[in-house]
Length: 76
Image 1 (cartoon, helix red, strand yellow):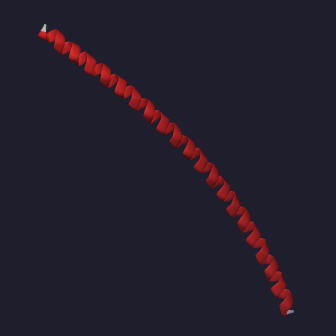
Image 2 (image 1 turned 120 degrees about the horizontal axis):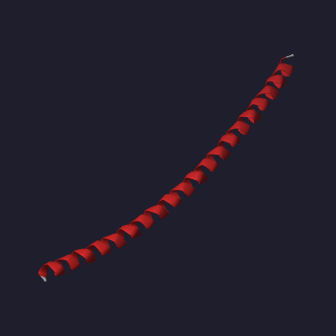
């Protein structure tokens, strides 16, 4: 009889642990999903920033050429 009670207690404990593990797994999966979404958003923002840098560089480069031409004209 004592062994039966002990086994029942162990079974209950295992059931509770199983429930807790399932809850923890769901929580971790939700966090992983959020992290993946943030990662995708970060990559998207990095791509936009890179495009802005390239456009900015090209603009500065063309302005530099214009300024060089103006300086050359002024020196003549």
